[in-house]
Amino acid sequence: MGWQGEGVDDLLLRRVRVGLAGSLSDVRIESGRIAAIAGPGQAGEASEILDGHGGTLLPGLVDAHVHTAQWAAVRRRIPLGKATSAAHTVELVLAHLLANPAPPGDLVLGAGFRDGLWPDAPHKDLLQKALPGHPVALFSADLHTLWLSPAALKLIGREHPTGVLLENDCMSATAELPVAPEDVLDGWVADALDAAAARGVTKIVDYEYADTVTDWRRRLARKPLPVRVSCVIAKYLLDTAVERGLRTGDVLEGSGGLLTVGPFKLFVDGSLNTRTAYCVGHYAGTESHGLLELPPEELEPLMRKASEHGLSPAVHAIGDHANKIALDAFEGVGCAGRIEHAQLLRAEDVARFAELGVVASVQPAHQPDDRDVADRHWHGWTDRAFPYGALHRSGVTLEFGSDAPVAPLDPWDAIASAVSRTDDDRPPWHPEQAMPLEAALAAASGGRAGVAVGDVADLVVTAVDPARLSTAGLRDMPVTATVMNGHVTYTA
Image 1 (cartoon, one colour):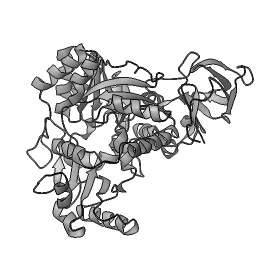
Image 2 (image 1 turned 90 degrees about the vertical axis):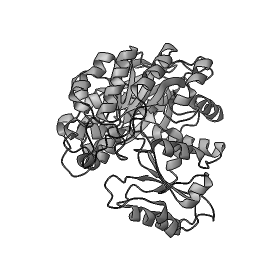
Image 3 (image 1 turned 30 degrees about the vertical axis):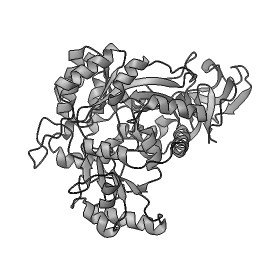
Image 4 (image 1 turned 120 degrees about the vertical axis):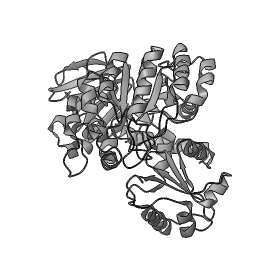
């Protein structure tokens, strides 16, 4: 059942086990908070009753890094995640169009390819040969590469020797491509949020490169939201945010507490799959260190300005050199904040996160997705890649996200990957960097380690105790119900 509206102000959850290996209890919720936890039949009454059927009650799940509009749109694009080469990618596009013909002249959109291990290179001529004169735009899984046909380049008034645009060129070209009408896209977003609620999600942090504050106010006015949303401030909107008086953590007026101002986003480097993550050493077999998007002399003033106006920096850093630069900037500015991704770290930088009060906002599903690419391009460095175990042992605050559409918006995928370090039948990849289940659950719940009286009633009921499941079972966790702000947003 999807979320239809606010519902009642009091709710009784019957027959739930509170926490891992918890005892059977009833939980009463009033005005969005947990009012009582007691034995069966002892927590009082409420106007709405939900039977948990002996399932496990946990804090609601939080996806700390989502590109919401892109995720909603990608759910409707040609899936390319199984492509093993540029030629195979074109075959997948043609097969999809054969089964689902597109109107002549319509922009063909595909998403999810990973070219880091391909034996051939993507090129606009491949698309032109397969679909002569047809506009085609294919997005890489990490959103840092855009592969365009000649007709698609013409559509946005560009020329390019290969049609394969990286980093800033990719981002700017993406913004110039035709998009769905606003009301259609908002409908897709609503569907995506209902799917998130069905996986136990009660909050997302939206990193869309847009005026997220305006977008989410409009969406909330159109339809009740099944999740809370933290609206991240894009780099180009810093002055606008300052003029509006927006500060990280502020509740947006008129949102009923569902919308808050998020952090201020900056990019230091690119990504692993495009080989643009900025590293201390050379990429294997090349002289390239990756791409430095924002040098320290530009990064620090932006962070300082944001911090002085109450906006907490969230700095994208993937390579080890990029992470060092980001941590140095946090130290130089003297503010806390977040580093997004933190995929490759120097050993001496791990503890600095905790020392500086910097959150490691990570996406554990990327580790099994990228293990083969890392083995090739970060050869000899992978003992310190995706180092969640080392960060946890050093007392660093970790928060989990998906980076959807880079990975599906499903925290159970992140939890399973963090605990097991694999998502197939291969042995765990650097198992010393695995996290305990309890720590992974907390990182996927915005730091909440349990459920207690007085807590905000953002909750999930799972059909099975996570502690009893295998890794595959965790990834496919059956969700019985989701509760956000005391209201049921999903029941199985």
